[in-house]
Image 1 (cartoon, protein in one colour):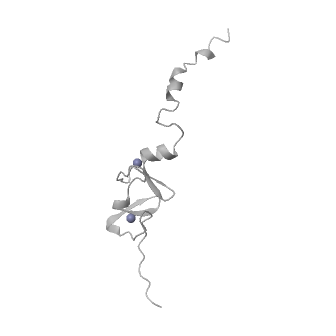
Image 2 (cartoon, rainbow, N blue to C red):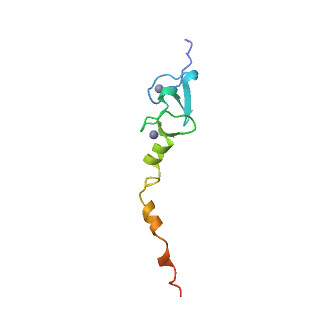
Image 3 (cartoon, helix red, strand yellow):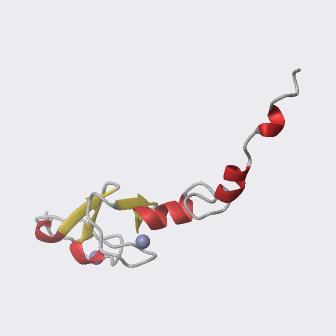
Length: 94
Ligand SMILES: [Zn+2]
Ligand SMILES: [Zn+2]
């Protein structure tokens, strides 16, 4: 039987082998240092500000924008909430 060469993990981004010297790990996958960037804004990431989602990488901001709760941090509804003081709920018991 021929010797089976050690298989380097493949980068999910470009599909090429990732060597230890250039690897970044997220979501159990190994990425090239240069491929370890946000799929939306292209920002280079590190292990502290990355979010992996189904084999794609995003920065925390883009991840929240794309997959987060609706309107999270983007103004939809925040203004309406601050205008509701709840006064209509008071005084009705007397
Ligand atoms: Zn790559
Ligand atoms: Zn981003």
